[in-house]
Amino acid sequence: MQDFRKNRRRFMTVMAGAGAALGVGKAQAQAQDDLYFPGDEPAHRVIYQLNHGDVDYQTHVLNSMNAMIGKYGGNVKIAVACFAKGIHILAKDPMREVDPEIYARVEGFARNYDVEWIACGNTMDTVGYSEDDMRDFARVEQVGAAALMEYQEDGYAYISW
Picture 1 (spheres, rainbow, N blue to C red):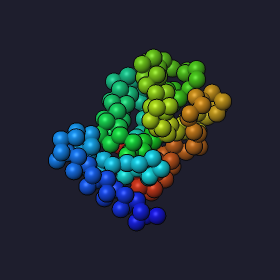
Picture 2 (picture 1 turned 120 degrees about the horizontal axis):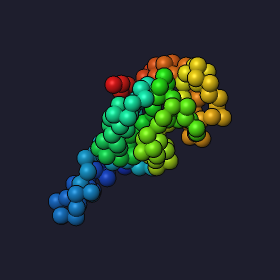
Picture 3 (picture 1 turned 135 degrees about the vertical axis):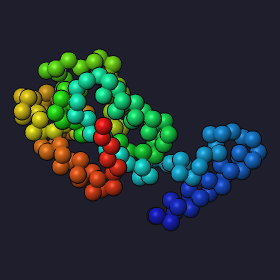
Picture 4 (picture 1 turned 90 degrees about the horizontal axis):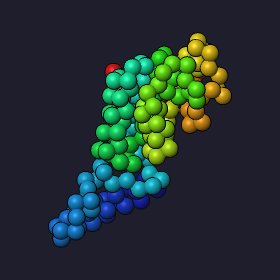
């Protein structure tokens, strides 16, 4: 199966190059790294740490995620571990103020780009959230820092501000 995928990618790269030579369009002249087929494992994987509540910080994290998706399209898998003051973006009814645009963008990333959102159970316990208080796309991991470590062990690049 691995050889089939490699050969399929090679074939598509050659076809994209031929299309570019014939002036078919830039979209077909993508680099081999950009070629991605549904069902393939993404070539790129990243996990973000989101642990602050201020809007500028959260905007920077979300903008970085947006840039990753813009660069790699479906060929990147993104996860976000939320803890400390960052946990509130995952709550159905946040206990702290969450900017409405941030709140909407988080859901958009989950629904439209399959971003994994991880809620730290220890932080939830500390502030009084239960699993039922979290948005339906959030997955609870008891130790958010352990989730960061495990994702890195699985080959995810770790991004923190």
